[in-house]
Amino acid sequence: MFPIRDHNPSHKLPIVNFLIIAATVFVFYLEILAPDLEQLIYQWALIPQTVEIGNPLTLLPFIYSIFLHGGWLHIISNMWFLWIFGDNIESYLGHLSYLFFYLLTGLAAGFAQYLLMPNSDIPTLGASGAVSGILGAYLVLYPRHKIDTLVVTFGGFMQKIQLPASIMLGYWFVIQLFSGVGSLGIASGGGVAWWAHIGGFATGFLLIRLLRKNNSQNKDHLL
Image (cartoon, rainbow, N blue to C red; front, side, top):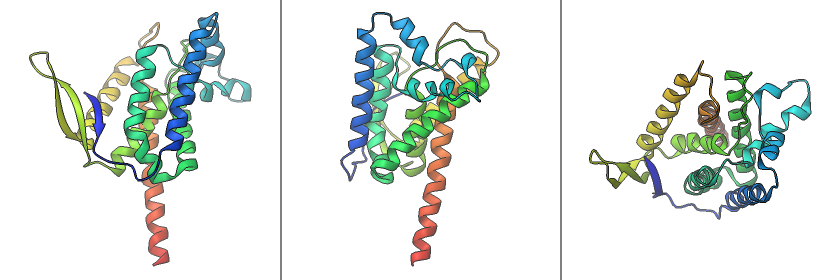
């Protein structure tokens, strides 16, 4: 399944979402210009094996890696998902809170990948974990909103259908979960950081539920 658009217009201009996308694209442009891309990746990406919890300098890649990407398809897919789903979360949280929410879910995603594969020497990079956090929040706030989605039919053709966000995003998460469990104990030379996706999604899902509950209690108190 691949989302095309959602039927959930934002009530605020998603300035921060635009800036995050612009900053990520700019970093990718710098990657393209880098004389030694491999050296750049190993310098700034998250490599679990090199993390020392007591050494703050080794923790910085948890942030840096969110803005790095491994190729055109990687960055386009991540920014496309962020473009579709991020504006509504920014509208709900507000601009500054949205920025912190995005970075926090990205950090949680990297930490989940580190916890499950602490001895890996494979660089982990990309906005997928932070974007997954946005998807988790969207599932909580807008489960019934319709998403125009491309699906592959039994004949191998692509077809556009409308699905509730709960179906489209629920299916997406189940795929990540099964893939993540299947990756445990497998020595790999690279691939998808499934546990970053899972950790980011779970953090976004739980955090937005907590924030919504607090907002509701504050309103009840004011009444």
